[in-house]
Image 1 (spheres, one colour):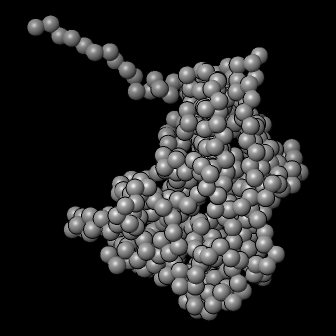
Image 2 (image 1 turned 180 degrees about the vertical axis):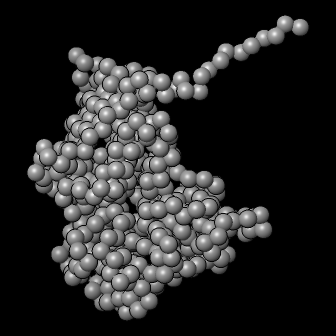
Image 3 (image 1 turned 90 degrees about the horizontal axis):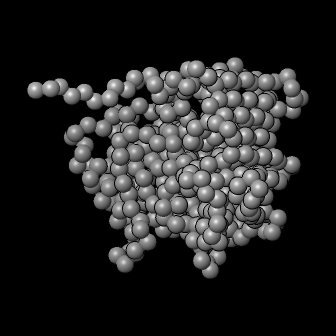
Length: 454
């Protein structure tokens, strides 16, 4: 019998072009007195802009300006970045991470695909099970979710919670008292999934698409939350009022025009500036299957202006009004998901099963709703941040803040701040003295953790 042979593919062929023309990355602190310039030159490929922006934002850097060009098969970008305090990036570890992840080693060794980033917060938590939840938001819902986990003796090693347009999306990473889950606990996982689904549905006639799903593995949290909301169609607010009333000067202004001579659709975005704004927009365009060929990003004071020259992955521009309207709505929703109205609570405590349940129970009993939250674990220390507002829609009163200090502050390090990303400032709301250094909008605590450990 004659032998037949299939085609042979060299496993190194996929990275051949990268090895012939390796990416060039430079971190320049000499060209500008105000910021660090990160320059990336490499062969273009689908999704590369999102990968680069994701790595920079995962390192908690703020992109103040950027110039993007990826025509002709080559990707050339310049990013002006600072740290959260507005200073240049001088930390050698951070610079090393940028060069390693975006340089030749990152592409050929798969670092970009496995880069830990914010998969489970600031650091890896080892073996864990991922829970994804989506449903209709209501006061006290996060407290109910965390109570189920605590009652079944599951520890929340990391979590991200967003709310938008009366919907809630969560990604939680759990393990059994900081140990990996084994076969004996499969029944508890099934019970947990059933109870979480019952809580999310709320009522038997609730057909809002609420559900809880389990998976073993990892995902990039921020991107996954955007994907969950888009699949839930949270951008379709209809004639309902949004949860946050946006004044005219902070409401996102998204417009789409045609650049006929160059064959692009031009997406222009003007809104209040904030960290991770570029990531949220690029993430939305990428997941909607649009490629960014050119872009200009700039921020002047509190305002940001971003312009993207895009085509669909099939090479077509946005032609129909329905398609343009959907892109506009999705970008507006992506921008609004990170806007919180109220206060932020930053807490550090010794990690233990039930900690999240305890804190959210206290918030619920004081009439407060959680609009966004981040939970991370480093060693034996839990570092949490909660963005809160009054469940009735009224400004948070000072006496409520003082009760929180009395109830929570006895057992853990607590810092209360007025959220700087609030879309609307109410002059009658409580004024809280800010402590612990400059306000941060990410889930990295810096000086707060240092104070707690010393």
